[in-house]
Length: 248
Image (cartoon, rainbow, N blue to C red; front, side, top):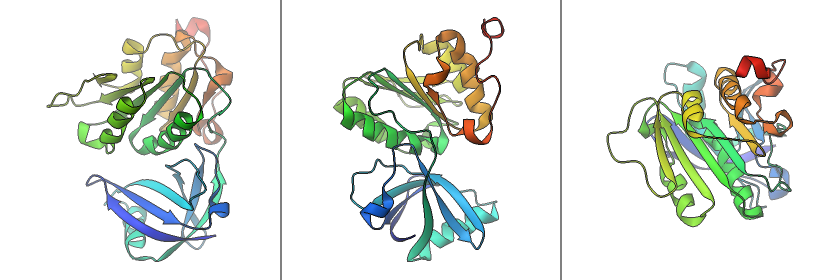
């Protein structure tokens, strides 16, 4: 299908947001799914859909720009100058279980926040339950929608936001239901998360990041049937969780 490019907006020097418009019925997707964008004949690039479907004909993408990569530069130029883009969607099984009322723990690295944003929008609209977002980046400026995460903490008393940065922020970060952590995401989870027994857990990032987090969460009560990530489809691991002996 084809979509109209409605807007391209820089969120940081490295991340830009693209808004696409199309027929609402053709853009239907579950929160957490992704689309594939045709870069050229035979070349399709996947991107998480960053908004929950509300039948408005809008798709939102968050795209990391890597100037040194030819595909990234070509994609950026295409987004700025093309009136329409060719897509196929939806794809992916890492989607929100709308019927679950279990506490929800979301863990994202970088632009993996896009997938979590769609899941959060749908979760907020479904029913109230404890929700926490752990967003890992190199430095504070990479939390490209920090203001939105802070807005959620003000609007939803059951939501908590954890910013995990490799470089300590220079300005104050912590606030009501907001906490800063410095270091790797797996170490931050080990030190600050506590039990995840009874939680639904969603992760978005590289295979190395996702599995490092699983190894950290396993002794905290993580249940294999209630953990979700696209990584499990394209980079599976057996066993998914380490044995109790290995994780203790």
